[in-house]
Amino acid sequence: MPRYLIQVRATAMSEAGDFPDDHTLVPRMLAFHDEMAKAGVLCDGAGLLPSSQGFRVQYDAAGRTQVMDGPFAETKELIAGYTLIETGSRDEALAWAQRFPAPFSGQPCCIEVRQLIGGIDLPPEDAERIIREQLATTKLGK
Image 1: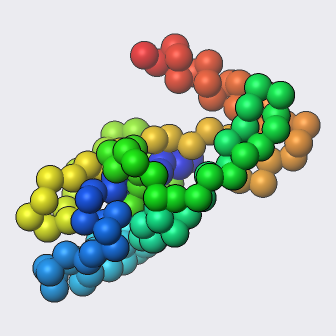
Image 2 (image 1 turned 90 degrees about the horizontal axis):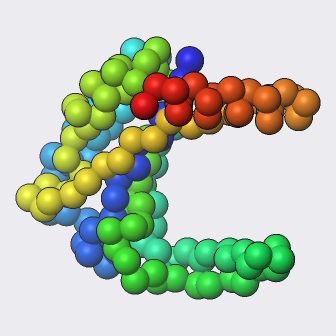
Image 3 (image 1 turned 30 degrees about the vertical axis):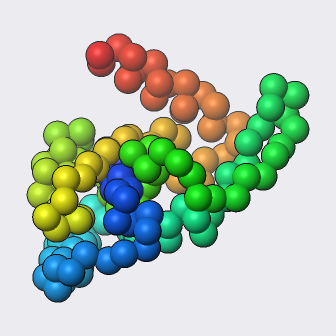
């Protein structure tokens, strides 16, 4: 079954480490995750600390790395939290995503949903073949 990552995009509030004043947010989010768990689609989910607490590992063309500490400037490109689900189809993932509680009460925000490629615990000899097949199917489906 396909897996989908629901990414909650960061806002200025989440990057500042501020939590919404809405005291119903956590209970609504926990109830929604509980509903997904009971439906058998929830794999994992969590909020993330602000990017000021994180770092990036940047690779150059030769494969050398450089570590950059946060914070990172483009808030709209950052993730404040995630939920990983496994559903029978893209349409089912969309239906769950459309019911996702608004993460930042009273503020505009965005969630992005992306399908994962590959499988869980693939043997190395099968990994590349399966990923290539999934990518080819995705390209054909457009």
